[in-house]
Image 1 (tube, rainbow, N blue to C red):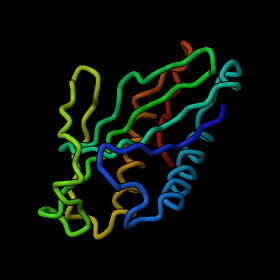
Image 2 (image 1 turned 180 degrees about the vertical axis):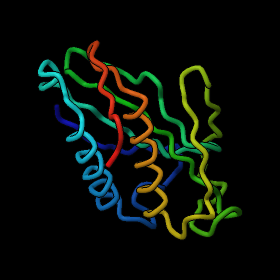
Image 3 (image 1 turned 30 degrees about the horizontal axis):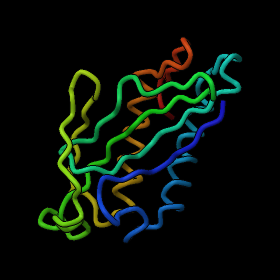
Length: 157
């Protein structure tokens, strides 16, 4: 099985601003690869790609999609991870109000919420890396179903 990490944003001019996007994605990808090496992946998923999309959003919590989108024709499973982006009133590395497109509300039937404390971070890179890792670990511990096969990590080493 292949995997990839992608980014999307509901915050204007956010991706790559005040953090090195490629470096962050590479660090998260190394962590994801380490986790996937601990999982016995069924052979029928060898052609599949598991994609985690980091969606930067104006939300209060980290949100991990429970089901995700599957596209069987191209053998792609996507799991959306909502990464909350605070404004500058909360932390100095936050964004201005004018950058926020809209506030997003989770439908708790489809999204698991993880708490976040913005004050634990001094920059965007460390914040995104840590919270992407937390969300990916959560998704893998909870289990991800791909084409009828549930992949789950017992524990993260």
